[in-house]
Length: 208
Image (cartoon, rainbow, N blue to C red; front, side, top):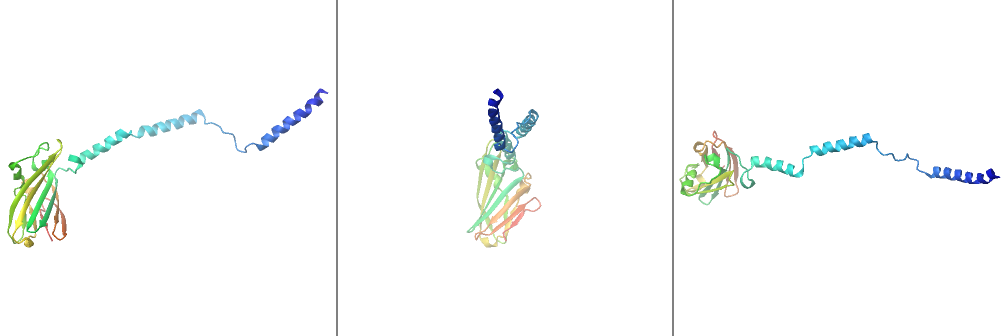
């Protein structure tokens, strides 16, 4: 009697278990990674982070690299180099030379001022051509941040027959041997442009 009563309950329970097994997922159950795998992943992540510089450190490295090639206010600053611009307007030729103070044999912590500073514009250029040109103006402007300094030297010439001016002879290398090269450009009245790199062995820029 006792075994007869419990048989239906046992049969129903067995059937329920079979049904649940049939309805369950066919994929394998999730298994968490072993302690060895977790350790390897953690060590790899630490290694990557160690090679990646912190943001402030990366910014500092970039600024240090830029400071090596730049001077006052982030401008280009190359000892031995300079930039020369020649413009023509009416009967006037204006020549402007911009370069580090060191190229003129000066300290980069102090900018020359007053009438004595104008001597650095004396004899730096000479118009070439069958006409007469007279120097009418000189000006000197400088700037420094206490470490890097530069100076712009400007000279204005007035020519009787300016159309006969063929070019400009630059004497900067003779007067200031610290100059190694100068990027020169001529800007004509009708939009003409002539660009040339000047060196101690090539000191003339032609306007044509």
